[in-house]
Amino acid sequence: MTEEERIPWDSRTPHQLLQTYAQLMQELRRRELIRSSNNPVADYAEALVARGLGLSLGHRSVKGFDARDASGRRYEIKARRMTPENPSRQLSVIRNLDIDQFDFLVGVVFAEDFSVLRAAMVPRELVRAHASYKKHVNGWILHLRDAIWEVAGVKDVTPELIAAAKTL
Image (cartoon, rainbow, N blue to C red; front, side, top):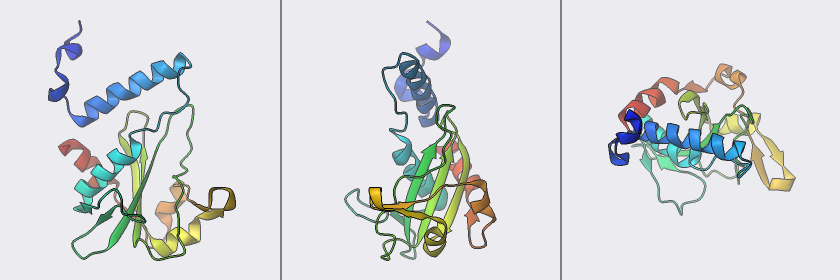
């Protein structure tokens, strides 16, 4: 048994647990037992964003946003975990962008091991300007390409989320 295997699960940090998960998913993919590897991405992103930006997460049943700040502004949180097999930065579908359900979208790009590569806070009007409506999914698609961080009004929140990851 290795030194790492002797560490009890409840003594490991969330990042250590997610690194173990990433290794497990690689092996299951190698064995062709799975095709997807994004299961805990959204929940982890929500926890990091809430911690890093001082937000309060809403109830899971609330549609259109995930968290609020102390001023009541609403935040939709989306994330993508990049892997060698799928390096896409496409976020999951954004529904009802034409109605005012959130004020900011916080997009997080994770590396394969769940470390934060980049994160951006994007005002809703800029999401609308940079996302594309796709009829077949009945929603809007946004790719977190590097250029989005250059858009006036977009805030880079990468340092805040990296710091938050160290505290979880």
